[in-house]
Length: 338
Image 1: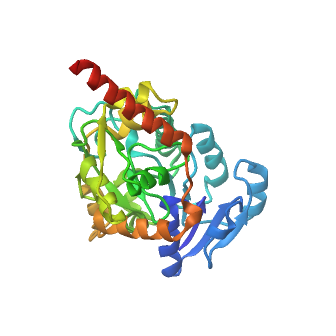
Image 2 (image 1 turned 180 degrees about the horizontal axis):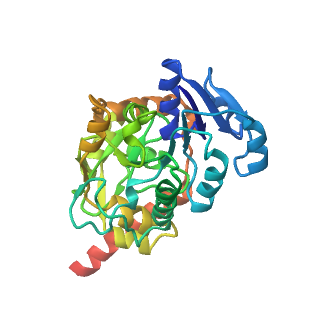
Image 3 (image 1 turned 90 degrees about the vertical axis):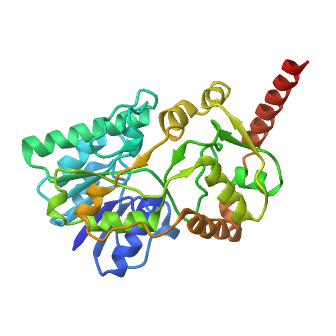
């Protein structure tokens, strides 16, 4: 199989890249080369900025592919460019959408590909929906061989997956846990969420590559394991070897008192209880099952992050904000009890 990935070094795509190369795939990565340390041995690098359409077209020359996958498209205009570049050049085009595009608020916590797409809380999700609409129009009207993939919260060894963290990443929350400081959890921590290890996602994704039954289809790829946010944070604290001191705060309050987009990331996504029905994926990829339980995967992540100081980006502004939120809540309790 000859495949081209636009991107290829991110959380989701890196595991797919590794597994494909192990399987002997002829893999091209269209990449700016700004993260050369993450480019895998064995991949053929086409170094260019995909936004420079003329340069990319020259680099591609007469190359054709069995699969092209765009991991870094977020707006319809980017898919319009991909259509111009790859229509007639690939047997399958895979777009990575997002499970956050599903209906919010949900009418049913059980989520399948038939769940309506609608998210009034998050522009990111609405853009993904618009991308899907454009591609399906090209499939229906012009036969463009598209497959849409919807991941949910997927993680790897480089970053700890969380609900509430700062703009600089999740390390500051882990640092707070290690220092026995209280940690913010949105809501009461009992809503259900799904964490998927990127190695599991990769096996599902590879099973869709070159799969004629996946053309014209939308497919979600997640673990079948459902956890409460309290369980997720407890597993992280356990992997760090310390006790968790949780402070529960409503998502609406967090959004109202932060400059970050918690309206989208929480109210439009992580604050909702979701349980994914992966029967369609299992029909298209017989034998697929997610093998990495969260408590196992998060230990691998914690061990890796602790061993790599370059991944421990501190965020003192977020840390001070957490302290302020907790202090204000404590003051409010005291004032009411007076």
